[in-house]
Image (cartoon, rainbow, N blue to C red; front, side, top):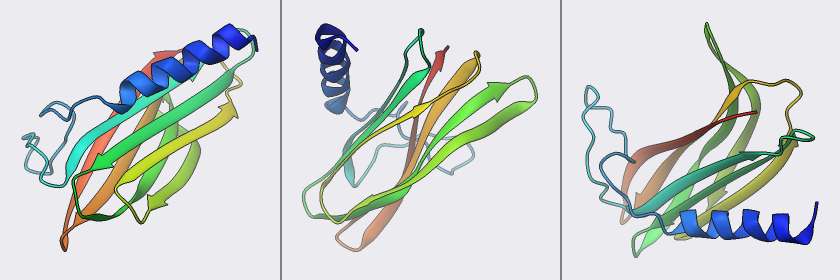
Amino acid sequence: MKLSKKLAVILAALSLMVQPLTANTVMAANDGISTQSINTEAISTLLQIDSSDGVTRCIANVIGKTNTSRIEGTLKLKKVTSSGTTTVKNWSVSTSGQILSVSKTCYVLSRGTYRLELKVKVTRNGTSETLTASHTTKY
């Protein structure tokens, strides 16, 4: 991959790292009602698939508020089909600090729509909350 293309990927990922947490980003288990986070400053995902060779970059970032002691969860790459989704790759992610930054690379073999899903439990001052974020793209 050319240096300019790598630089563009890095800059795109960095710009998503500081995405502010909004009600649209956080999904609560309250009958679909979105709420503001009590433990998290920001959460973001980025899914990029190289159209020439299927190289796939899966990037996820979570920034906890001060005193965050643990962030743990799963990062899943899924293929979207007419009957639902199929998991292509699944990673466990965790940190014992305030910032979780994950970058994974894999290959997709067939064209279609793919979704990167991040689900994490953020623990701060003894209180935990679960957050989700996703990004969908076509290959």
